[in-house]
Image 1: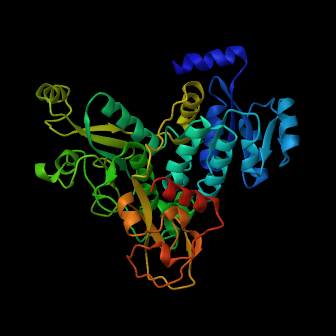
Image 2 (image 1 turned 120 degrees about the vertical axis):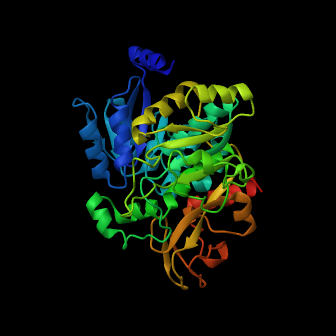
Amino acid sequence: MIHRRLAELDKKGTPIRVGIVGCGRMGTGVINQVSRSPGMKVVAVADQDRGRAEQAALAELPSTAQVCATDDLKAAEQALVRGEVVASADGRLVCHLPLDVVVEATGIPESGAQVAYEAILQRKHVVALNVETDAVIGPILKQLADSAEVVYTVTAGDEPGVMGGMYEWAAAIGLEVVAAVKGCMRPIDWNANPQTLAGEAATLGINPKMLASFRDGSKHCVEVCVVANGTGLVPDVRGTHARPLSYAEIPRYLKPKKDGGILSRSGVVELSPPVLKPDGTPDLEKSVTPGVYLVVTSDHTQIRADFTYLLMGEGPYYVLHRPYHLCAIETPYSIARAFLYGDATLSPVGAPVAEVICVAKRDLEPGEWITGSGGAEVTGQIDTHAVCRRENLLPLGLSYDIQVKRPVARGQALTLDDVHLPEDLLVYRLWQLQRSTFA
């Protein structure tokens, strides 16, 4: 039992030593929960704004903790010997400290690549909240981690980890997973951008580009791409069907066409936007959101009868809904699984199964800059890796601050030849290594 093992570590005074990189909402959420979890301790915190890292450490760690703000490795090591907590602007420094697990929570593909790669080289377990990095180079990071005999995993609590756990459970007991589906709290508009969402973002108190990354489907596609690569499930169509369905409609539509559904196959990842009211606002009573769900079936007559007896519907397709995900709050569980058992919450199964590619939101001209997920230029849409490779398509994770070099029409998927590639970035070099490794 994980809780008992953690209690033993507490009793021995040998907690799991955790370093956290990225002190935004997710990173500080991890600090909050690790500080309250048995058998583990935050020993280092990093953010590109060192002051924010120091503030996060001081605000959430025990009042008796002393914080050493430094970007010098030797000074940081000495601080840990004194029992202090290190706060740094250098995420890679954290990877070189004597600790057990590095949590990467920056949300930026290049930062995620640098921290995960450095941690693996230093033989530290990596728990990634950064799905943007995992979606583009997760398979190669997993292979490197295997070679270093450490764990690379995404976190429990975020939708990909939850969906992966549900899939693992269902597959392990012999159910056929027809679809693994991520609920979306708001409608998807593939052309949404920070300008069109400025008012809504101000009302919600969040960054307009971050809001746009969800509303334009990019973030949702990134998350189900992580699930695809971690389970072998595939997108049925580019961008998924993303059809708003009520709970009662799900088993009628999310099933193969041969049985009257909309899917061309069984074993897919999907998005589930909310059903809308007549005024265009989400109808949360009818929608299966928040949370995630599976559509499962069985070919056995008695098992189907048991599902019906247990009030799971008439079948033969059944909905298993987890109506919540707790984001960073569940991360300590992934930390414990990695350290205690060498077990991943969800990590790539091998070669890439899917990728998230760039589709132009408007006509793009040579010389324009593309600003990545949630920007005004492109949206991210999931497709199979085979299609992406065959059509030479540009991954969303490589589209941060790059220039267009030839015209691209609105609605067109960008190819590698349409842009100046970020060849100086580690995330690009690892992606190239991934392509050659799994060729």
